[in-house]
Every structure is written in structure tokens, then in C-alpha cells.
Length: 387
Image 1 (cartoon, rainbow, N blue to C red):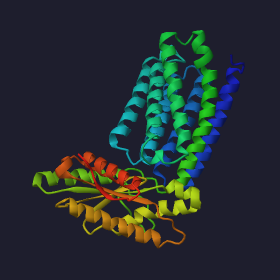
Image 2 (cartoon, rainbow, N blue to C red):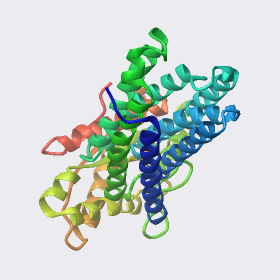
Image 3 (cartoon, one colour):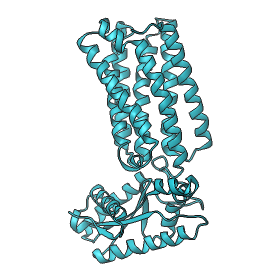
Image 4 (cartoon, rainbow, N blue to C red):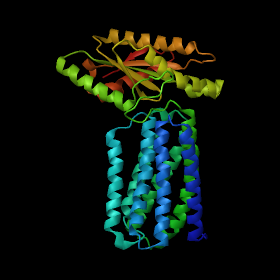
């Protein structure tokens, strides 16, 4: 079916991947504040490693380790794409990074153990790993902050298509074998190269746009988001760890605990109606404004690109609601004071430990969901999370 020879397709694939990765890496140097961009940049670096590893194997068939490194790098590339999506949504944890590392190491180990097979050493594990992380990445683009950005649909398509293709490649490899006509025609190296070229181009465009439209993307876990005046809300991972600690201590002491979430919405609509500059002004300013109006001795952090939260020892629902409403008013005042600013929809929700227990994740999710419902309501009431 495909008349192109293997050398030509491999060469063109290498040129596209290296050129695309180089462009993205240069942009990463300029936009260092993007935590998700760093993970995606690492994914493109892994793609370059894959190209050179397979090229080395082609030149010297005695370099069996090159196949193992290439296979592991390929899995790592899709794993890093998934992690970048989770960073963008403010949902990256240690377990996710460990999962990617474990699958990469498994692929490396199996490829080394099967080195006598040659070209297809460790192939089933590699195919399955790629399909898994591509699927997880595609699903992640359909939730949280990514779901609200139109450019993310390109990434959804790329990762979804990769998941479907490599799932099919895995099944055909295991059932019909790599020498079968079905595998050679539809899932062989030539066809895979063409699919890779198309998906790489779309992926680079999508991730570049996502990074440009979101300079407020959560920072690399463990750090803080870069604020204009040098201080900002805690990053998602750090804030979640703080909430877990406070929840545990509050439970032991029998103290009341509440999580209040505040969410901005309709930023994309502001960009459409008033221009990208107006939307970017909101995105780059609102978390700093939230931090400035936090009550003394109250910890605040980012949950995702559109949601921030604070944890406090609130004795009852009325006190939690009052804190949330006061915080929203301060945010409105600050944003309204900016030149050419357009106010987004701002929702506030809260969750009480007396309703949801002292599980930090349950409290954060419940409060964020209430804030999301509040922002979607035209009246934008302060909503209490339901049980």
C-alpha cells in the first residue's frame, strides 16, 4: 500500500521530530515559567533520543542496547506528555511520576532481556506502554483547565489517535505477528513513520499554543507559581500536602475544618469578545489578587489553572461562606482596578469536614466542584458542597 522506502520515511520522520523538538525547546527557554511546558519539552527531548537510538541500531546491529534505550525513550515520551497535561490541570502527584518511571524501566528491562530477538525486542511492552500513556493523556485533556482551552483539542486528537493506533499495533503484533502482511502494511515501520510525522506536527502546534495562552499554568510540583511581586499561591502539590497535614491534625484535635475554593470562568469568552490581551490580563493577575486578600494565618494554593483554594478552621458554614464571599469581593476589586480589564465569572464554593470527613482530597474536590457550579450559575452564589 505504501510505496515509500524505509530509508526515506525514517529520514523524513527524524527531520520532522528533531526540527519540531528544537522549535519547542527554544520556546521553552523563553517561557520558563510554564511547568507543563517543561514536561512537554522533556517529551520532545525523549523523541530525539528515540530517533538517535534507532539510528544507531540501524548503523550497528551489535548495539542492542540502542533498541532498549529507544523503546524506553518512546514510552517515556508519551508518559511525559501525560504528566505535562496533569501539570497543566494542577493534578500531578508523586504516584504519577513513579508510574511513568516504572513503565519506562519495565520496557528497558524487557527489551534487554529479549535482545536476541533484534528489531522487535520488547515491542509488545513498548506498544502497550505507549497506548496506555497516550490514552491517559487524551483523557486528561478532557478535564480541568485543559478542557476550557480550544487548542487542547489538537492534543486530544493526537494522543487519542496514538492510543488507538498503538492499541491496534499491539493486538496485531501479538495475534498475527510482525511478519504478517496485515502488520507490515498497516502497522509496520513505514506506516508508523507517516503517522508519527502527522501527529508530531499537530502536537507541537497544540502544545505551543497551550503554553502561550497560559502563562499562569501551575509551576513544577514542589515550587510556587511565579507571582508578579515575588510571592504567589502555593503550587497544587504543595498545597495538597499542607491540606493533608492540617486535616490530619484537625481530626486528632476534633477541630472544625473547611476548604473554600474560588474559580474564574468564561476567560476564553473574554478573549473572543475583547481580544486575547484582555483574557491574558485576567489569567496573569487573578491568583496574585487572591493571595493579597487571603486572611492572615490562612494558607492558600492553586488547584488548577482556573481554581484556587484556602483551608481554614471555620466553626460553621456561615463563617466559611463569609470568608469565600470576602475573598471574591477583594478579587473583583483588584481586577476591576486594572486598566482595560474585563471581569470573568467568579464562583465560590466550600466544603466542611463535618460533612465530608477529614480526607484532604475529598474536601478539595468537593469545594472545587461547588465553585464550578457557582461560576456556572448566573447569580454566582456562594455554594456549600453537597454530601
